Length: 87
Image 1 (spheres, rainbow, N blue to C red):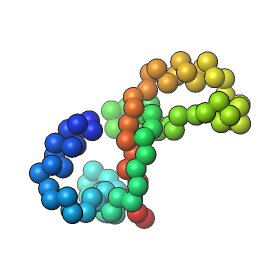
Image 2: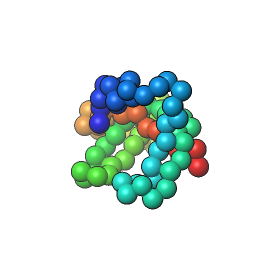
Image 3: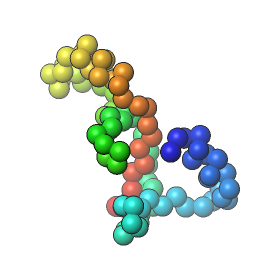
């Protein structure tokens, strides 16, 4: 789902509605959303992948990561919004 699609769906609900996050696709557990952040998503398969926060030059040095390698890798990732559950 894209942010624009989410906004369209959310516009059908009152602004004071609580946003709840399900722990899985089967709805086995629920938690209110407590925070969100922008990140980069690297798809692993159609259902899962990895999320990375963008690294500063200083963080790249701390992680001992090659800057050019990271910049190349970033080009294959998608910008994303990560929702964090309260629990």
